[in-house]
Length: 89
Image 1: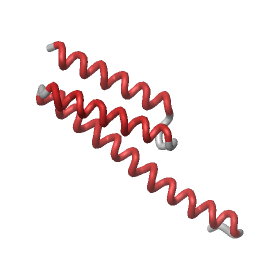
Image 2 (image 1 turned 180 degrees about the horizontal axis):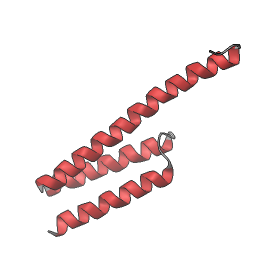
Image 3 (image 1 turned 90 degrees about the vertical axis):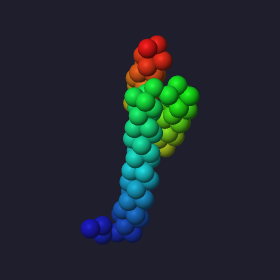
Image 4 (image 1 turned 60 degrees about the vertical axis):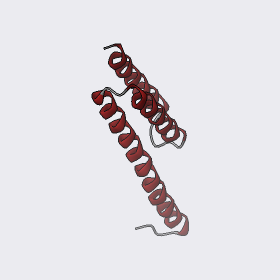
């Protein structure tokens, strides 16, 4: 347990950040699931829409530090590659 006031405040702040980061990561996972479901279904319009929302969720998570910038870029690249393969076939 924290013994001084600054440590107590830091504990409160880290708890708040942990909850926000958890929510942001959860949104990224949800959007990724929607994208890959749309790819499996073969709906081209839904694929493009889901890809845009997935990229937006990744960018927001990276902006706030929930995930690293390169991690977001790598995930967007892999999703784009999967989208290209799905639209080519």
